[in-house]
Length: 516
Image (tube, rainbow, N blue to C red):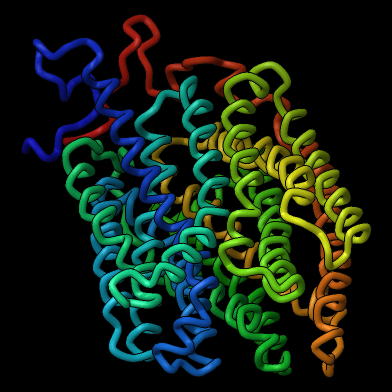
């Protein structure tokens, strides 16, 4: 074992190592993988703010602009399940480092792109590398931390999600407005370079290696079917509005369901034959996982609708600058982060599933409050008047996002944590894509084709209120779906269970599943 491959298990520490050394190292590792997750979350949203600058400076066509955003999302979603399984097979640390190195290189290529075509290709590469990196975050946490500590860790993860959701547009607005060194939009990609290099260096030193305890093989047929099915579903959703919802789009989405049915049948045979499927269907027999996946998908739809129409409402409808719109979202981000930490550490151990359900109702209340304020103040609404509904919505989201991840993974066997993590991220991306597709119906469907400049603002305000009504309805559906979740996540019932967490309860040390 080399010095750069130091593991986090007790067996990796020298005999004279301080007692808290391993503990400190794994928290360093957590900080590194959370930083990578934050990079991805920011990169998904940071580009939207800079689109006008890219269009003007790079001379990108409208179709190319669509692909700069859609290319990343499609490559990311299509590769998540495969990326998670590769981590189970070849090692989660190894795939994480490969992913973050590739993500950093792709960011550099985006920042130095000579033309729009190069930028599109680099964004697709960036999404593919994120698909290798992101599933390892949850699976590294699942393999590194015992069950009774994961609630605290997922609380931090939820805080990062909330911070990333709003930080992307704000950071994009600042970097574009500052025009550092005359580089226009390019710093939104180049900012990833120092972060990626540091994360790569520290990751080699502090992150442990872990993989499935038995030898698995990559299911290439499964990879092909998953990728084909996701592309057939997500491509029409991503570009449907731009193309006028052609008939082939509906045929493609219907065909995707057939491909997924073939995938399930093939994976059943693959499991019986050699026990190495890409999608571990046995996970869906775990009630907490199956119910959590359903909630995660619908939640993704709601967030996909809200964040896009919110941005359009502020920047197009109200005519605000990107910076003002970004700053308006700060209370939301703070509320998500605070509620996420509080929920898993203080509330879930005591109230269990009720915390998530309270989160859905709280978020719905915030949405309804936002509709009321938007209607009352109209075009004259101020940023500070949005603070209350955004704080209520953010608190509700925080009560959901951290405990939900915890609940979904709480009963998943560790050898399948990569596959489970990939599925969690994939269904959320599918939900987001579906939400973005629905925006064309729920939001743009309420806006007339020929509007005078004076009509644009009121039309967007009205469409915003209409779309948010549907978001509130989605939250009500999520509340009902949550009754299928276990009343309490496994770790809060069992504590540091030796079988689930890999912990020797007598010694308080982890069993050496992690490898050097």
